Image (cartoon, rainbow, N blue to C red):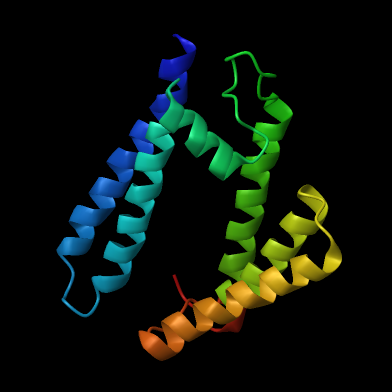
Length: 162
């Protein structure tokens, strides 16, 4: 399988899953479908940007540069190939967040995950890590609890249920 095809397969699979999620969300009651449709809409926009970044033209290069900082080259395109260990670590971070959110709820999992990821994985300074973790959590709390009136999952240990 060529490198370009390998790069777009995950995007295509995630797009199919997002579209299934969107169709499912359309079947919900009017007041319940807002969050799934917004999440799906944002996901689809990001997937389109990811797909566009896979090319070799100026737009693809600009998107990779904007979203990836120094990581302007795709793996296998003259840059260093992505290491398997780094990919496994990325999945481990997602699995850890899922476990945290399931057990403790999103309002505890989000700041812990964001802080830990930025500080220990990305190596960012302490103050920006704390500010980003607390700012993101506050933004989500205001958006969901106050503006949308939607209670976020509290975690199994705090009375949430699946």
